[in-house]
Length: 314
Image (cartoon, rainbow, N blue to C red):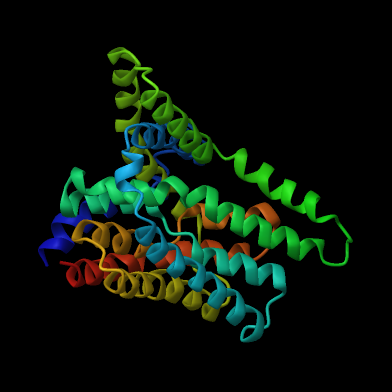
C-alpha cells in the first residue's frame, strides 16, 4: 500500500491536475497544447540529451536488458496485430495501429518518475538505457510496418518505403535529442568538455520536462473519450499492461539481470501506452478512436497494475 500512495499516486495526481484544469476550463485547449508542445518538442528532448550525454555507454548497455524489454514489446505488437486482424476483423492498417498501442510504452513521462520515486534517481540508468533506443527503434518498426502495408499493390520500390520510414523517425524531436546526446557523449570521450554554464542551462530545462509533460498529458487525456470497440481497447490494455511486463519479467529472470536492471526493465514495460501511440494512429488516419480510448483507459488502469508489478519486484 505504501508504493501506491508514496510512489504511484503523486505522479498520477499531477496528471489528474492537468485533467481537472482542462475539465474545468481553467486553461484553453490551445494553452494545454502549448504546454505539451513545449514538453515534447523542447524540454523532454533536452532531458534525454542530458541523460544520454552523461551515460556510461560501455558499462550500462547490457544487451540482455534490452533483449528482455524489447522481446516483450515486439511480442505484444505481434499479438495485437494478429488478434486485431483475425479476431476483430480490422483492416491491416488498423491492426498495425492497434499493435503499435500495445508496443509503445509511456517510458519517459510515467516510467522515469515512477522508477525514481520507487527506487531513487540512481536507479534510472537502466531506464535511460532502454529509452535511448526506444523511440528510434519502435518508431522505425511501426512506421516501416505501416509503410509496407500501405505500399501493398502500389509497386513502390523497397528503398523508397525505407526512406519514408527513416525520414519520419529522424524528424521526431525526441529522437533528435537522443542523437545529440550520443554525439555529446562521444565528444566527451574525445576530450571535449562543455562549460558548467552550459550544463546549468540544460539542468534548468530538464527539470521542467516531467512536471510540464505530466500536466499536459492530463489535459490531453481529457479530450479522449472511452469510445470505440471495447474488445480492441481491452486488447491494447492486455498487451501493454500485462503481456509486455510479464514477458520482460520472465526473460529478466532467465537472463539473470541485476536487481537494478530488473526494476528498470519491468517498470518501464508496465507503463501504459503514451500519447505517441495515438499520434501514430492520427498520423495515418486509422484506428484513432480505439487508440485514443486505449491510452485513456490503460493510463487509469495502470495505477493498479503498476502497483502489482512494483510488488512483484525485489
